Image 1 (cartoon, rainbow, N blue to C red):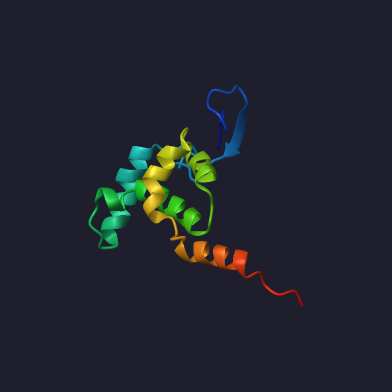
Image 2 (cartoon, rainbow, N blue to C red):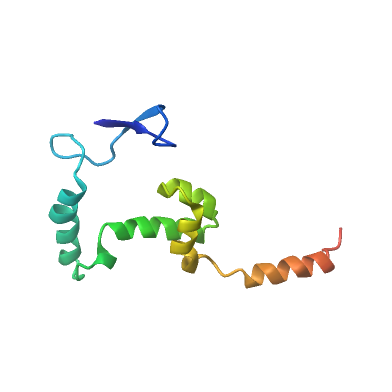
Length: 119
């Protein structure tokens, strides 16, 4: 099954059709609540994990975002990927996950005043 939706901007008329990665047994779109209740939570319980908000499906979204930030992706790009209209919102939600920059800052200034010697 595939799904057709506005891709970059929901206000645009430009629509993109993509195949669904996961489908129901009838090859339809999976309802988020049904998947959470019938598949995700039972798997969490079977793994011996207490179902909470922190272990819910939404946690995968945060895992995705934190993985991208850890790899050096920009807040602006991440906001776009997550569908946030305001990168400031994304920054407020995920700033605590951004890698510390103190070492990069020190290295940048050191390199400025002590450029590497040319071979």
